[in-house]
Image (cartoon, rainbow, N blue to C red; front, side, top):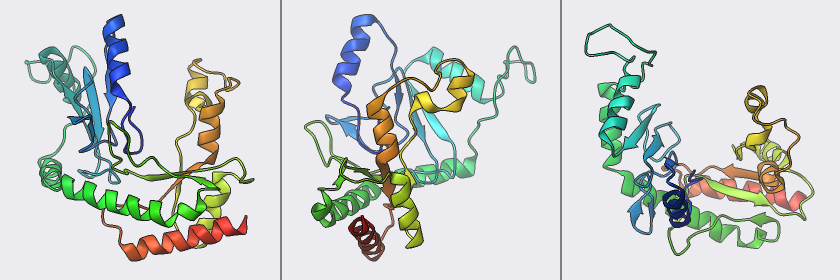
Length: 247
């Protein structure tokens, strides 16, 4: 799962899959236009998925896309997304779903795809601005990675993690930002704490995954849309600096 606009180090993943003859399902929901060592994210998996939710780099209003490089998988995906119709119309041998994209949505997506390079450039510029402005907060905040030897961040979001010396959690920071009319969102929650998995018997909620739990409790992200202005970013910076100064 590539997260927040920065890809997983795919070489070890692919080596492990090859060694054990495993299939790779690549979640590229947040990776539109991102690459790993020059190769597009979403091109590694036996099945890869993208999201077109409104806050992604490319949107069709809702929905997503499955990418495969196998004729049988392609036929299977087409079957399931179209109510599992057999060649005999209105005959079903199994249950499927109505997940067909409309022509209007497809047209919107194609138009957005033509602009994805500009969207990424806008995001990187906005990310660089935040990183520059938050240099004096690095004693309290872990800033996102800008680049490694295999990728440059495309900043689907701008994630921040509170360091151990900060005695409040992300929920408190977000509450204080909200009072200053600045929106923010928490990090994704630890999988082993999700009630649905407790009901399925996969986890009990008593397991200990301290790194995941810590990041979930202390991570949040701030506004960084593709059309965000410098004036809007300056408001965010001012508000967050005021909040951190209060601690």
